[in-house]
Length: 79
Image 1 (cartoon, rainbow, N blue to C red):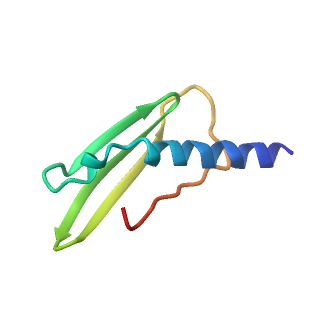
Image 2 (image 1 turned 60 degrees about the horizontal axis):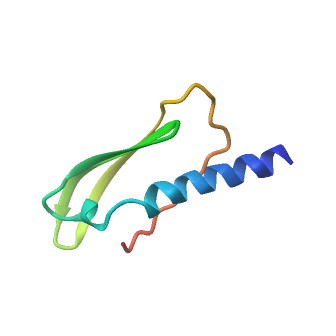
């Protein structure tokens, strides 16, 4: 039961991180940004771009006092 709860929390955290990102975060003029939430931080840097394609480096950081276990990252590669 604990693993199910941990998986749900991880999915919810990852979904929250990417759902709440403003669309302008993916605009050409902005190549990096950091989003801070309660207990964790999501940063990204566009390391290379050409045409409609970008190479992006994503960093997830635990900035809270508690260990985040069984986390999962999800993103929509088309948007």
